[in-house]
Image 1 (cartoon, helix red, strand yellow):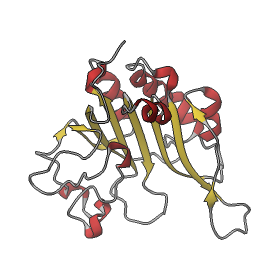
Image 2 (image 1 turned 90 degrees about the horizontal axis):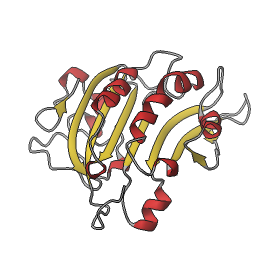
Image 3 (image 1 turned 60 degrees about the vertical axis):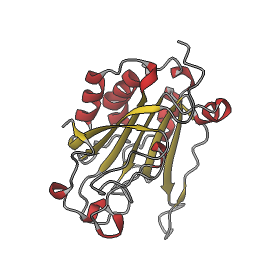
Image 4 (image 1 turned 30 degrees about the vertical axis):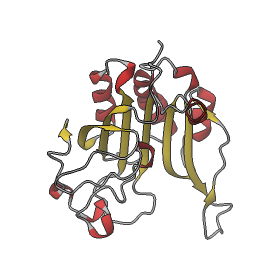
Length: 230
């Protein structure tokens, strides 16, 4: 599939956010859960891109050097691609001492995007919202899915399946460009950054210090900025 020559970092995306609730011990970053449930579902989505073979991963995890250590340090995972070897490397095993923080997937990987000056066909990420163990949390996992409109028809069933696996409190949809998001006339949603910089902090005006977790979930105003899918 050949994409139009005028495509750049200004591509338009189908953009989804999922606010998921974890089942203890069955989080997406657990090895068994990843291979048995999530990896096949992610695979259905990245198959939409002709650049699937060039998919790259970035994963942020921390670990303590020993039981007596007071602080965590960044865990180096090396180069990660969309293959079994990489998945075994980054997923947490039973009784794993690592602290999982964030996962992001680029199709094609970011170095190719930078070289060609074209934003990715597909971008997916999920954040462990409980990484600091601060309570209360309004949701446990924040998931973003961005699929470029120009790669063809999206698979709604595949996206719905993936959303269900995250046990969503809410799944919402919008259309936006890779860069700054569309203006929210109600001044509630605050997307000043690109798709890849979407985190739970700073996206919603309503909670203290722009922390969405400081707003009761049932009081979060999604419409009309978002279309509520679930």
